[in-house]
Amino acid sequence: MTPACGPEAQVGTGLEVGELGLEVDQAPLPPLNREALRQAIAGLPNAEVSGALVRVSGADGRWLGTSGVADVRTGAPVPADAHFRIGSMTKTFTATVVLQLAAEGRVDLDRPVQDYLPRLLPAGVYAPITVRQLLNHTHGLPGVPVPQKDPEWFLENRFRRFSPRELVSLSLPPGPRFAPGTRQEYGNIGYIVAGLLIEQVTGRPYGDAVRERILRPLHLRDTFVPGNDVTIPGRHAHGYEEVAPEDGQCPEGAIPYGTRCLVDVTEASQSVPWAAGEMISTAEDLDRFLVALFQGRLLPRKQLEELFTVPALPGASYSAGLTRYDIHGVIFWGKSGDRHGYNNGMGATRDLRRRLVYSVNTLHMGGDQPAIAARIITAALQGPSQP
Image (cartoon, rainbow, N blue to C red; front, side):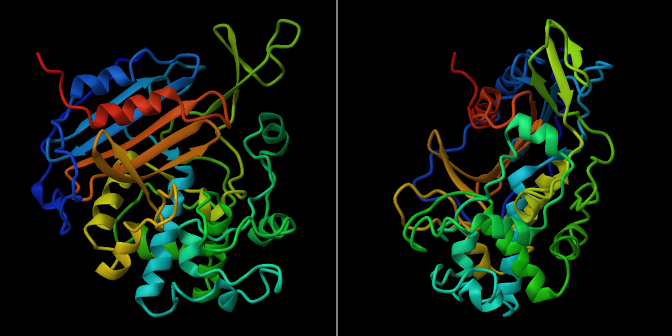
């Protein structure tokens, strides 16, 4: 195992306290528990994960740790500045662009998306769906019926490209899941439509809007909208999928690793998630993005509040681009993301006094959140043990 490391540095207070205060009735934020973070990522690789990267920042300073291997062939350690596929954390970027367009008066959050994309959803089948309902997962659109997290399908189709409109057309035949605004059901389809909305309103690819409105102003030089590029640029940990041996041997193309057979799944088309999950970034860039976003440097106050507003529906936890988590009484706003070989998360208290970005390299696609992710999140918000 590559030992976890935790170089610690005090962070300037100018980025630590946003304009917005603590959540009502929130439990006090415990001191940063560096030992709990070290233990959370210890012992890698294991049967679930090959590597991990964690960055915690805020009022108590910064902790940065890595564990495991970036490349099972060479045994190279996970780089602290590794690029990784951020999966559904892309939704936060897409939502931010839509909210920026709303602030400019180019999009009305209460207006039906059918007014902007009149031929996308069949008339008479789909009731009016507002732009806000796209962003907070209350739209009722059926999910994309592409089994992208099924290992067999993925290995046969990993470089296949889908267009966004093709994905929408594949999704629509079953009809609405529920009447818009009556339930919340998480999925990618709303953000694929939101990407098309951005393109319709701006006349440009949605990726251009993300780059011009977020990445360049914030100098996020290690964050990318890959489009048709199947690679991950720069230093990165590889993603792997464990496959079963055949006749006691690893299948062709698989890497023997101890008693396991691993297929490198790092390179793959990201056209299925598209504006809902295709982006690549680093822990440092995502932390900088969270700070700017929560401080209101990307959105006026009215639109910023959309990020922190969860619909009043049973079981709802998603806002327009974020998720509200209650972790031992501490309210954390963030987003998780999952791609083949990568499971990630970012989040912060609303006042930015505690921020977390992590990425772990999972060995089994399509499953539940890996146990190590839960340990990381708990450790980031768990105070030191009492004597």
